[in-house]
Length: 465
Image (cartoon, rainbow, N blue to C red; front, side, top):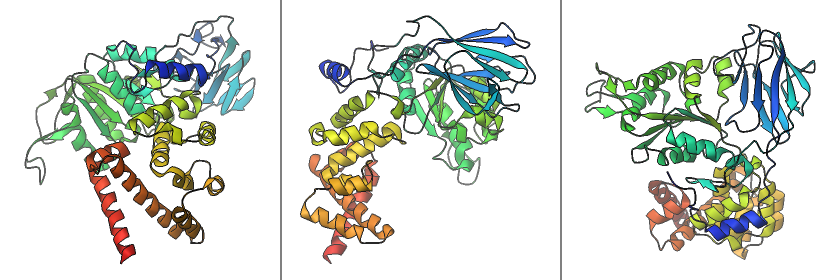
C-alpha cells in the first residue's frame, strides 16, 4: 500500500499552493443522534456524524443501519445522511410514508429537534454538542482519483481500509464521478494489486450475451463455440472483478452473480463441473438500488451481500475546491497549457453544475485545449455567452456565422465538422503525427481516432472537389 505522499502529476508545492489560495472546503458535517422514542424499539439509538461511507437506512431489512422490528415499517423505509449542518431525510418509496413533525415528506432537511414517524415507530433527530469526531484524510488523491475537498477526503480513510480487506464493495454515484478509478485504486493499493483487474460494463454488452461474458463457455456449447472461453469471473481469478453498472443486470443473472460471489465458483455454459475461484468483487451503479429493490427490479440478497462496504462518490458540484486541482491535473495529462484558459472561463466552470461530473470536465477541457476560442461554440456557458465571447480568426468566425443561418441539424453538422478537423489537426501536431499517442491524449481508442482522421480527410477532399 502506498504511503499517501505521492502527488501524481502535481508536485507537492503545486498542491500546497492550491490548498492555500484556491481551496475553500465544505464544512464538516455536524454530529447528530437518532433516538427511537416510541414503538417496539424504543431506546434504540444511532450516531449520525458524517463518518459513514453512505447514508444510513432506516427499516426492517438486515442492510439497514437503524434496523427496526416494527412490521408496519417498510424494509427500506427512509434514508438519513448528514449534509453540512443539516440531515437530509429521503423517503424510499415506503408503503406508509414518512412524516416529519406530522407532515408527509418525500425529502426534507432537518436541523435537529424534529420528530420522524415511520409506521408505528417514532424517533427524534438531535444535534449533539460535540466536535472533532469526524476525521478526514490529509491525502490529495487515492490512486488516480484526485480531490482535496472535504467530501473526498472523508472517503480516503475508508478506502484505505477497504483496500486491505477482501469484502465485496458497492460503489454508487452519478455517471462520471470516478467509480471505476476508485475500484481500480482499491485493487491496486491492496494485497491483490499484482493480480488481474477485470472490468465488465453491463451496459456495453447485449443482455443475451451477458451470461457468456460473466461465466464463459465450453467448446461446442452452442453453434460457433469452436473453442472454450473464460468469463470475467475466471479472468479475474487471483485479482479483482469490477461489475460496472450492476443495476442494469437482468434479475435472473443477479442471482447467478450472487451465487458466484458467495460460493467462489462458476460453471461455464455447456460445462458440467464447477471451477473454484479466488476473486474479489467490486460493483458500481448510477442507480438508487434501494429504490430498485423496493420496485422488485434488483435482488435484495445481492444488495445485502454487496453492502458489506458501501461507498457513494459525491458529484463534482458538491466537491467544493476540487475543480482547480482537476483542471491543473488534466492540463498536465493532456499536455495543455493552463494559461490558455481565461479567468472568466474558469469562474464559469466553477459555477457550473457539471451533470456529467469529472468526465464532462475532462472532455470540456480537452476541447478547449485543442480548439481554443472555437470551443466556445459548445461551452458550458451557453450559446449566448459563446456568441459574445467568440473571437477567433476570420475563417473560424465565418464557419460560426454561417452555421447560425442554417437549420439546426445542418448547423450542428457544420460546427461539429470544423471542430473535428481542428481537433484532429491539433492532436496530430502536438504528437508529431503519431496516431497512437494522439488517440491516447484524446482519450479515445486508436481505431476510433483513425476513423475520425479519415472522416476529416474525406470531408476536406469533398470540399476541394
